[in-house]
Image (cartoon, rainbow, N blue to C red):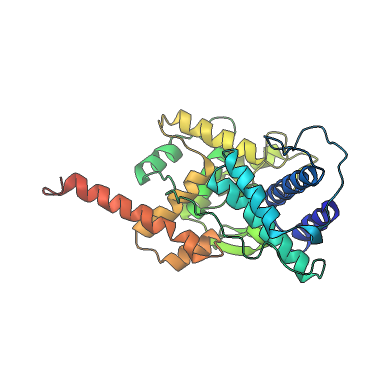
Length: 315
């Protein structure tokens, strides 16, 4: 199992081009199952908490071809008894399904024992969004005269104008940005590339940053990333979070503002102003339209709230 897991993670990285976070999540799910299976087969009582991070015992390894459907269902029941949420169990199920499907496709096991595993039903929560006034307050509250103010304004303007993920923002490169055409080329999940429009206000903010502030930040280790740290290196996702939080605090917003909230707001505001759902899907880089459809529910909730507030016979 351990060797097979290593081979599978390598496949996800090299052939599928999936993100490091996805690889790590999949690895943890598979190694947790492998460790539980080894303990169970050794006649030991399965641990009451995840074994990852604990000191490893030497246990007999299990071959992938020896795993049964019943063992997988027993493991999932074990995780459920520990109080794991349906969403977390779903991640494990997905990891096991794609792992055993991959093994079967490569003739490393005779049959796919995870093929008929059902996915746990999870509650679908509507994403949080900001209204247009809150977004304006956030963006206009950034002082361009403050240290790195031009960068921070350009950064947040682009997040809202184009609905980029944080990972896409930190990896945005100068050669993929065309301010005259008002477009940026980004590489999203699964190493898929897409073109995303950039609004005029965001273009103006980015141009001001590139002309007045970025040249002063360039150092020996500077690459072609658009947004730089004070040391001239690429910004991290953690630093983006810190910048967004600081800007929200300075703007006096009493809501929880984080980078992905601007992406949700971007999609919701496009939809409420009449944009086609398929176009929004393309701009967000969603592989499945069902992922984008969640924003129709957000818009419906907004319409209901407006109706309830202003219609004389709604209450």
